Length: 190
Length: 190
DNA sequence: CGGGCCTTTGACTGGTTTCAACTTCTGTGG
DNA sequence: CCACAGAAGTTGAAACCAGTCAAAGGCCCG
Image (cartoon, rainbow over all chains, first blue to last red; front, side, top):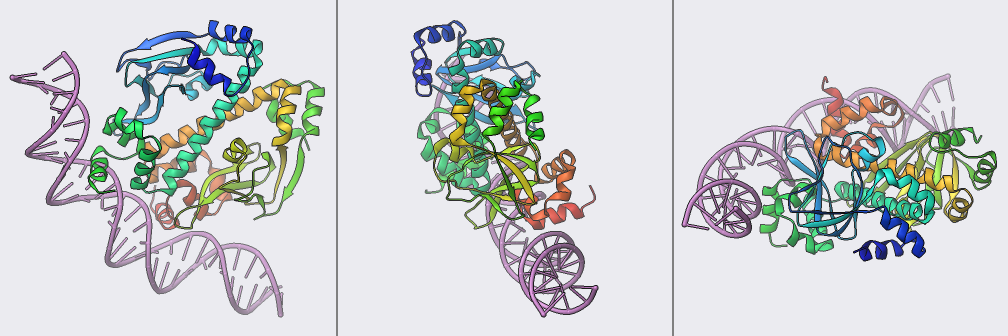
């Protein structure tokens, strides 16, 4: 059960068996059905979730009362509301399973002590955070540099699996336009 | 000269005098005139820059051959192209001084060894990176949740100093619309 | 098999961009 | 210190892209 997460970490840092054991003792296994909530808006985020299997979306309710999706996350990715974790305040967003999903939760309250015992894990999380930041920056770049249509085509070619996996209206929300517009894009020949 | 950066770090972690000394030995002081480049597109980013005094912008050339500003940075902020630092590849973007600017460069090549000697600094940078990520996520949220006008008003009220400090066309670029449109927004009575 | 949600399609609306002309500001050399 | 050229900001008109509203068709799940 721990194989996926340990394999992932090994891509970035080296842990001794004892360190791996320490990490695993600090993880909580959780399973969610489709539409279950990992985090509900208004509650404080409990920690970082590593997705073993499944798919989740992170969204908030915008001024027009629509669900605005800000992130998807699938196998071998971490997901959390860093804003809530950083400030300790209630979250403005919701994290919900799109499919049957299994995760490991690394509770925020365990993190500092664990990092003290296993410094390599701090390095690992710093690298993951840097990756996440770069991804967010790239996404901002795409929004400014590409038309809606280009962004849709780019995303489709980058993550073809996703087009199968998530409903169109969620993809439209993530890309920042309406389901109707996405439908028209698909209707157009490439 | 080191006061600003040490004060900033002290807000997040505690360093011994010896550790502070070690850090300072790894910093390179640099001074740039208005319009000088801290990083030019096509070159690999040298490391993280801490701004002691001044103001810089980070931009890339978009498909329409306009300069698309993706970030500003001022006193007591770090700036770098994390994408280039992470991959080691040439940067797609340029970092340029908008004013006379003084910085400390923490060269990427010194980073790993320094973190080994001063683990608290790794914690500090992890926190800074988390903050930067949260800021990027919030910005994405604003883009999806607010109209262009709301985003302009929001930014103006959040960073009133900026409106004085940077030319309008740069602000327009950062906010993702045309200088003409920004001019019209300003003309409207709020 | 039925109901509700998702997707598609059409007509209309409106906000932003584009193009262009004009004015104001800025900084650089004589 | 002034003059002038180029850069930055303003304003108007027209075009266009994406959103909204609405209605119909399709599909999934209970």
